Image (cartoon, rainbow, N blue to C red; front, side, top):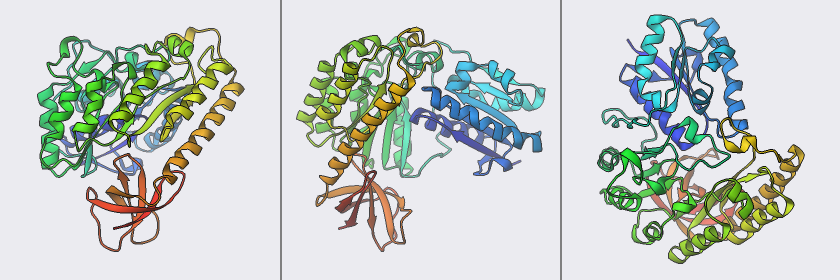
Length: 442
């Protein structure tokens, strides 16, 4: 009997891919996706706790589902992701109407957990983290996600233990997938018509280097192998740790034509004392040297980053050093946040916290300057002709389309013809907005 599934996803690309996997798994049990949670037989909330604000967003949505469950007692409400792993069975004390609490490693057991919740009429908790965990094979007979572009998980977990971060405690230690399994999945997707693939993991630069899942071939070799699949137009990856960025990987931006010239390289802070307290294991000089080398190889590369403002002990001079990094690197974009204590993370115990009003003021200054730089970089594109992969019809008036450049810039352009997502077209850039470019198709 066909049943309906609704998934709400918070957080990163890893969570987005996990949600696709859960939909695939329940798809094997005749579940179909719905956009209306009140119609669903199963609701899954895939949470993020990387920062306090993200966790609060997840908690705030649970009340909506409680009301739906009151009207439909047969509804199964499952919570997964980092909040579920972090809080575990304690979630049930606060919200006893939840039926399933499962960590990221347990998502592959979702069908059996749903069955058990229905059969036993009691909550199911699956939050064990195993060092022996192996990412299961992909599901070749089921499609979930955009037809023209997909994420492929190549590894999960993290061994870096940055002092602000919960990932090693919520996703476990670093685990790499089999090289051959990744190539098999990528090949299958391209044969199904996928034109762009993004390889994802907490630290893709260290793919295959550690532990029981150590691979004989590293990340640059994996990139070359995926890029060699006939029919793949674009290849991307995220996220990278600067300490593991090798020159061999930098050369890939020159030597692999389908590898997009966009690199997300989190800096977190421009101050060496703060980087040291964060346990980032590089200096700002190391970071800037790698940026310079990247631009030697690929001058047109677009760089984006992550920045934490107001880390414990951050002085005015430390913050000024971070602002200087914006001026030196000139990022195309940044994800910037105020520091917040996270459970289990070492920095939660640091005593020299920064006042909230200081964090707020610093973040506002940083974001304002970053927006100015991003707009300046977009304005520099005016008059150029760029290759754009069609995403779909724009929200603008009729005959307007939206796509992305290789540097991951959104371009809105006009075309009277009917276009298909995944097509590549040349577009002349005519104007720049804060978050996008506008142009006309050549």
